[in-house]
Image (cartoon, rainbow, N blue to C red; front, side):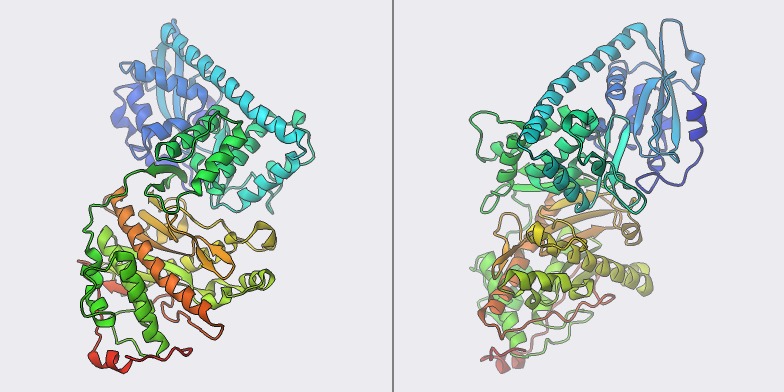
Amino acid sequence: MNETRSAAAQPHGGSLYGQDLLAFIGGYAQHCHSAHSAALHVLTHAGRFPTEEALKALGMADRAAFEVLSRHPHLPLLADTAGAQSDGTLFALYANSLGRLHIRPHSAANPVYDENDSYLEIGHAWLPAAAVAEVEALQRQYLEREAVAFATVMDAMREVEERGELAAVLESVIDHVEHVESVCFYIGDRFFARIDRFVNLIDTKAGPGHLPRLHGKPLARWEADDVLLVAALHALFLSGRAVRFEEFNGIAFTADGLVRKIRDLYTSYAAVGCMSCEQEPGLFELARFVGRQTRQAVGQSWLRYRRIYGLNFQKNEFVAADTRSSEDPLVYLQDFGEDYARLVSPRGGHRVPECLFFNQLAGACLAQDIAGVPMPAITGSAAAGWVEALMEKIVASAVKATGSDYGMSSSIRDIGHLMKSEDATLVDSIHELTPAHFFTCFVSRGFASGMGPAEARVIASSVQRRMMFNRWHFIPGNLERSLVLPNRHWYYPPLLPDIATHSDVHRAAHARARVKYSIRAPGPDMSRPPLTILNQTYRGFYDIRVIRMNGPEYEFEQLLRARRRTLWLEAVYTVLTSYLQDSAQNRFKVSGFEPGAYLDLSACGDLPRWPVPDEYLQSSAQPTFAPA
């Protein structure tokens, strides 16, 4: 290989992501019987990244070459240039620290993503003239398709400029990038990002960002990459808010990919019965139409969810028409039937629908708290009252049902902070909140016996504090954008349940907490109305999260089970907000779940039993509804 590439192949401690992804493609030598086999191993990060998604990370030239290698699997991977012949072209195969595969003529210079970037030389492939012609034909095909799609993108941007909205669109795109967790993608051989370790899209203390440099420039002076960048981010936001950006994380932004993405989203919603267009509108209008469909999930049987690939932060949305779980429909009676019988009705709730069952149980627990009835001691519980014990047991049920190592749920301690009827007062109250105003209920399975009390407490405490910090970020994201102060850092609240793999890569907090695989089911669920507190609606107000530190990845089935527990939590927050809205004198505050305090189930995941002596119930048979 050329001198630059060889020099860059020296060991390197990280990448723009944070962790060097070359560590995840080891073992490629076992696939050196063919150039295609070795390339596939590297492309998919040793089989971790689905091939269909991994292909989207390739540049057009690399993808054309990879496709031709797949057509000619007999072509060997050469260790050096000695296999070069006169009739054909020698191609070099190498990957950089971002894990991006390149398959390009040996004579071509390698792209430079960062001055500290490193490359791993995989080998060479000699393509005969006929195969080279196939590569060139595919490249022309890709470029022709890209030109057609870019014309669609350019038309949409010209319409924006003609309406005098170009500056506003650019400003909104910058704002959206600032308030999404991770953005990172390629345009050609350039890497754009706003992630923990690297930011070049927006201004930072280290220097100006790429997007702000476009301020004041007419569209005619924008580079093609700039047109695509702004148009793509604008269209994606219209189609599903800023989290949609993350569906391009780690892959290549192209006009063709953007147009296909918006059309595929439209098709997926139409397939589950959403409205369809009589004729296809322009790019941004189609994106707006898709965005409207994303908000039509209330009362629907279909489910939007995402899969997250932690190595490059990529998120992919799916729409599931069938949300039936293999879990026992009556598992709620197995887990909570005894509690219901003691607190609500001795009949045990066997004929009570699931949603009503938890509304009644949550109401009974709140009545006990309001009456000042102390919660009998539960061994190891971090709850300080009846409602908190119900939250904790729901989290425990999620841990057991999903075969997880630990789980959690977070929200605000005192909903009273949000009981403000005037917008200005509510906004002031939200801006006064700190992470300490939030809590995280944490439940583990066999932590103490598996890793020792000291390490277990460190993990539990760090996770709890991190979730409190995250929830503090999410709450302002429910307000009208203009109401949030410029100096208040915030993120758009999570809306969709998701399944994540390899989450312990790049993020130090996840690595410390051993978050290998995770499921997040935010609440209220998108099939349900948002939580309404006086005049303000909220999404991402609470959640159920479960974690596996090793073992098999989660499947869709486990997501359905975690989501079911989020629906159970809905009853708790509905009862609490109804009570608080009933009178300005009513108060309720979560006082348990301090960082470091958590419930540790046995290794088999048995749920805690509530010791509810009859005298407690008899003493509170006529509770007074005065503030506790």
